Length: 245
Image (cartoon, rainbow, N blue to C red; front, top):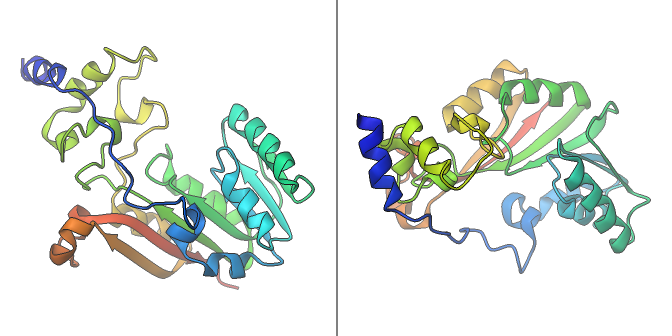
């Protein structure tokens, strides 16, 4: 009964598009989310772009000094587009794109993926195996689950994904999507309900040393942002994970 009531309420609400807080047009996504030092760290190195999508960040790394860039993604269609983009950018001799990677690398870059991985802890263990000793993973992701819009499509207003049940939200989504998803984790792209605490725990259990964890506050909630409120007031998580020698 509660699911049906919530579903009827949701049917009256239309999804809205929300602009990203970070604007990438001027300086690019990598610089905006990881800072300019990412290019210095990648210079002359073999870099893995984990979850590369259409390869734009891989191409930027190649153009800014990486010796070799490997882009990986589970979607072959995205990889084919990445290959086309690399060829158009003239860096096809530096960039490789594949669904599977077996080569060890110096640096892994992972942007906007950790809230979507079906098994993020397994991904971190996989990354550990792909890194050379002394290598590092540079991560940026968000919004996390307790962010006002951490439910992505399901956050039709702030924290809607927490106020309505998963069953009601999935039923509402299935009115416009016919992929048969029955849980948040099954929707296109997947939502694993990632929190800052879970990410820290997974990283430590995977054997990484967390060199830094930077939590970028939501601008409008900056004054409230602290250790106790971080799950609710963080916009983007930025981290460097190191595989020690």
